[in-house]
Each structure stands twice: as structure tokens, then as C-alpha cells.
Length: 637
Image (cartoon, rainbow, N blue to C red):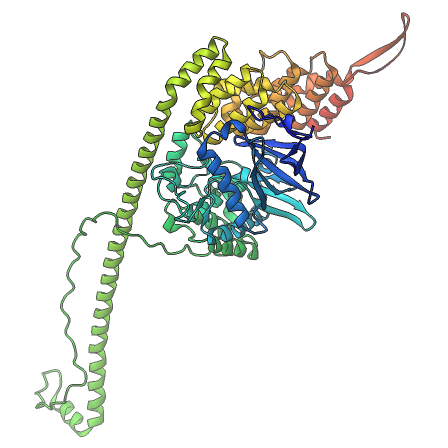
């Protein structure tokens, strides 16, 4: 087969082994997302391997999404830089598939690395940030603002010279070209809520400084091990991005307080006010370079914070009057000398002293100069006192002005965030009725009818998370699990997943490897909210589903609130030897002391060898060596 059949929905497996557009032989499926799928392909004419990104066919009816896909290829192709993925082709195949060809990278996304490692060492994190800024510097110089930076769009490629960071997915980038007509409409929220800048969260005008805020958030996530904000829904997350300050690094991980220069750099990048942030990627890159040059900021004193200028937003209340400074006598210098009659000296000076001064005029001059110096000293002290008072007055006025402006900015930002949230809620109401009808169809066991109600809404509501979640449920009930996962991936990029979706993902852990792995990936991304669905594994009969659910809970961490030790302990009694082995290994890794009695029992278990009815020997029971090793690990031997 050389040409793929025209599908109604993208089935990645059906494209593998075909030749797209007569030029690209598709060798394997690499990944899927909300917009489409990525394949490893071979350009037949150039004899070169490439990555192909194919847009889901059902989305090609949306003019907006077609434009977004076209813009991604156009912008990325115009940015020639070692830290930006290179796009080489963009076309529509004769079968109607929209695709773009990119350089093929070997490595992993920053999201996958963080999922595995939790957090990164400061030197590794700073090097990644520096390379990010190096790529953004070129993009911003061309007037391109990415607007959707996040760990999933940062790829760490492996090569002969080591690791190289690549920026991916310019699908919602804004290009400062008036002729393009692609500026974001006022009040529209664009991007991924977890990594939106405050101005994006409120639907305000966006420039390159929005990307720098996101770089700061990515740095915070890499260094601390989790995102600075947690909210119940997308609206709450938008409010936090708009109004809540990003906590200092040292407040979350005490050891980072010993790196003041690094902490100050991240803090400045994460400022809510764009004017208080770094103004260019080059500035942020320079400070990150300084952090590396100074041993990650381990210096006696931190670099002082940059001065911040504010523009007044509201009148300031008058200050309390300051006590008046007494009028000062002045001495006029350079005036013509007018000799005056020598006055009679007062009683303290006797006539003898007066006579002596007349006989010794130099002594009289010296005493006169001394008196002038004393008088001048008094004047200088008075002038300095007045200057000090004026300085304190100016400082008080400046502090009051700055505080009033900060209060005004916070009020305006909160109001804008509420307006943006109200707009989002109003747009959600527009699809509530057909979604509710689709829910009734799903409950009645008619997923195809539900999908028929929902699919037409994609053209105008492609950014609605509820729509994508319901479409995922429809595909799932029809048995199209990969398509369901595509929809849920898109929904998660827009808002947290609901409990029914999380339950479906946990159930999918018992499916084939492709579906199980993608479901586990989404559950880990969902984080602590996935905990209740994972904890409800007692009702699931397959021990392998339980093992996978427990592994996901361990990857999420304590926030999942799943007692993984108890879960693995229960699996030690399973009839399947391989399950017991896996449970023993996990208990050893967890150093679970509660399991020691059961593990010792399993370690000592032996299977008897018989010849007829005669016992001729014994051997360790299946799983006994793994149980013994777990005991040694727990006891620290």
C-alpha cells in the first residue's frame, strides 16, 4: 500500500507503512496530541529521516485551526536557530491531510524528564533556561512571541556534542506583522493555564515579556519540583496567575536560599508587572550566564534588585505636613568690604586685653577668623539638616506613590481577571445545551449520536475543554481508545480533567501497552486530583491494573494520597508469581517496614520436590528471592 485511505478521524496505526504525498514514507508513530500525531518518516527524494506532524482530519474543517497549523510552519520555518526546531515543509496531501515536516530529534521533552526526575540540579536547570533564552532572543527579534511555552514544548535533544534544547510548537505564536491580521483579540485567553503570563490570563495585550515570565515559571518548576500554583479549575488558576505572587525559591526548597543570585534572577523573571520583569530575552540570558559564571550565585552578597519605574494610575492622597524648618541667616560672600567703627568690647574683655589686641593685630585677625569659622559651621549644620529633612520628605512621598500605584495595579489586574473569567464562563454556556444532550445520549448507550452532536462544535469551539472531554467519552464508549486519548490530551491542555475521565484513564491501565502508557502519562500530568481514581483500585479485579495504578500514584507523589505500601502488601498474596515479584521489588524500593513480616514469610517459602508421594527435596518458592532482596533493602543490609 503506497497511499493512505482518507480517514474520517486520524488513526496513527493506519498511516504507518504508507507514503504520504508521494514523498514521505511513514515508518513509525512517535506521539499523539490534541492537534494530531507525529511520525518518523523518510523523505524518499532527499533520502533523509524527518518528523512529520499530521493534523487530525476532523479538525481541517476549522478555518481557525488550519490557520494555526499554517502559522506554526510559517513562523518556525522563518526562525533559523540552533535552539528552535527546524521546519522544512508544509503541505496538504491529495487525500486532504495537512502536515508539516520537521527535523527529527532524538531525546525527550522537558516534561518527560521532570516527570522522571521530579526536579533538576541547579546547574542543569540554568543551562536549559539559558538555551531557551538564546532561542527566544532570535524569535523576539523577528517579532515572534511564542505564547505557549511549557515543559511539553521544550525538547532536550541528544547529539554528538551533548544535549541541546529545542523550542517546539509555534502553533499559537503571535507575529508582530500588521499585514498578518493575527493579533489576539482583546479579552481572549490563549495558552496553557499553568504557564500563562498575567497579561495572557487577563486577556490583555501581550508582548515578548510574556514569554520571559513563562521562562521564569519553567525555571521555578525545574528547581522546586512542582508548579507554584494549584487550583481546583482553570478559572482559579487564571486568577492566581493574574494576582498571586510567585513564591521565592528558598521558601519552597530551603537549600535554594543559598543561591541568592539564582533566586533573584528567577524572582525578577516571574514579576507580575511586565515593567518589573526582564525587558528582553538577552537581558535574562545575560543574568543566567552570570549565575553560571559565579557558581550559581553562591557569592557573599546578592546582586541588588534592579530599579523599577512606575506610571501613576490613580491620584495619591496628600501627605501630612512636615514641620517647617526655621529660617536661616546667610552670609554673603564676595560683597565689598565696608569697614565699620570698632565697637566697645563688653565687660568680659578688660581694657588690658583690648590694648593687647591693638598692639598685636595678627592675633586679632586670627581670633576673627576663628569666629567666622564657628559661625560658618553652624550654617553648614543647619543646611545639612534642612537637606536631610527634604530627603526624608521626598522618600516618604515616593513610598506612598509607589504603594498607591501597586494597589491600583492589583485592583485593575483583579478586575481584568474577573472579566476574562466571566467571558470564559459565558462562552462555556454557549455549548452547555448540546453537551448536556450528548451526555443523555451517552447514558442511553448511544455514543455515535453523542459524537454527532459534539463534532460540529469543534469548528468554533476548539478551545473548549468540556467539549473535548465529552468527545473523548463518546470515542471511548465506541471502543476507539486512541481517539479518546487524543481528545482528553487536548482537554487537559485547556483545563483539569473531570473524575469520569480520570476513572476511564485508570481503567485503561489494563489495556494494551500503547493505550496504557498514554493513560498513565495523562494521569501523572493530572497530578494529585487523579489520586481518588487511583485509590479506588480495590474494586478492579486485575492485579496488573493495580500494579500500574500504584506505579502512577508513586510517580505523582504524596499529593495523590494513595497508601502505596498497603496496596503492594495486599498483592504479596496474589496467585500470580510475577505479580508477587513486582510487589516485593516495589516494597523494597519504598523501604516499607510494615511489609517485613510478610516479606520474611515469602522469602522463607519453599516448594517441595516429590517423586510420587516421596519428598526428595525442596527449592525456594517462586518470588522468594525477590522477597529476600526486599527484606535486605528495608533493613539496610
